[in-house]
Length: 393
Image (tube, rainbow, N blue to C red; front, side, top):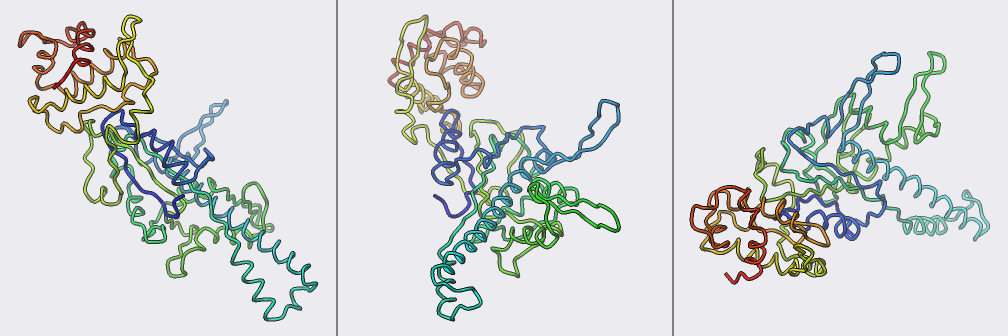
């Protein structure tokens, strides 16, 4: 289990099991997250904005036609709110556990707290120190991070990615009043104005509180920080806590619409997933290529030979490492002719050999210049599979 947050971009060729690694290895094993409510997933795309990430005010029309406005929290706001909420929950539980331990010790020695000797007070303090309650980890999972305009999507949140050794953001950012209210509500805080005479009503997680309790719960969030580093959420200041990790995946073969600048990249750890990492070959060992209801070959052997073909030096493919495919490229137990044509052959035609069809022409034993259209290529699906099966390089 990781004691520090993970802030990482997992990248590699398509089908190398990046999402599989995130979901089945990093999240359960390194972050020890089993509760799905602590996993906030999203996918970046060209239309994804800062409003989708942080939150936005949207009009809402009721049955009578009246228009009202509601703030919808974004994926990042949901993630940081959940992390804050888990910190508060752990602090409340820690306080309860210490109280229970105090009552237990009082019964054990038969004294009230005011009657404790210095030695007994020290013993109780040591018992309290042994009580550890860490907040549950939360993870924001961003799929295809390079398909959106990351700099615009993150906005000022970008500054929070600088973490200190304890896992907290090095520097706070200031959010808008609207974002602050949305964040507080997402954590579970609510504050209602009743009247001039009655003042405000305070709630946390559906429970009515006194104002002092409300403030105490709010202060729990940053209580782990030194006084000089502490910030106030009520003053619209936030930091990323140590129990919030951010994981992102990126296909290196994709032609990104938006440039990811170096300053943004430096805020992340990077992990490359090779086509043969994590015993992927063994994971898909039972998968077969099946053409015309005939068992043709093992899928993992086929992928190995296909990558040999792609990486053949005589083909002179630029960034060839990004053009290989992983064993999860077609994620089916049985790989059919339709899968080969519509996904694999299209990828080869559109992304790998888009500038030079000669390697495909030679593979299929056709005359140079005769393979012109994708339709022609797909008609050769059986020849293609057989040629890759027998490919020696």
